[in-house]
Image (cartoon, rainbow, N blue to C red; front, side, top):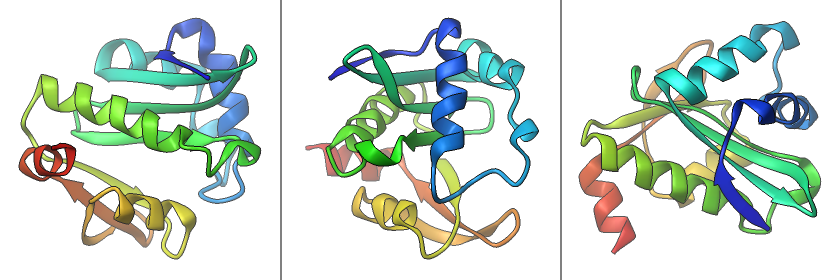
Length: 147
């Protein structure tokens, strides 16, 4: 497994991963464009990818402008192997190196993603978008968790 920062040349593979997920699927694949991905990994924040045998199998992207986790997705066949946890750690360490502002995310309720974020120490703080669970992580909570 290779973990590294995402590059614009990864965008086609990122899109493939995003569309292979079984939960938190996009109602319309056109909602997240290649241009959106490029903006988020080059201007608004940063992204990371995981490759296995040269194939991109997961990615994570954080948005510094909105203090939001924009994406963390894996190909279903690569779940439960520690890849999501490592992408999450890389993203969160970088985010809190840039700012001590709390970061938030939204995910569908009653999903493996909701369980994952709970296990990573995120706190449920309400509902966002169209009924998604809103989670928040503070700098202090991340530091305590990382020690």
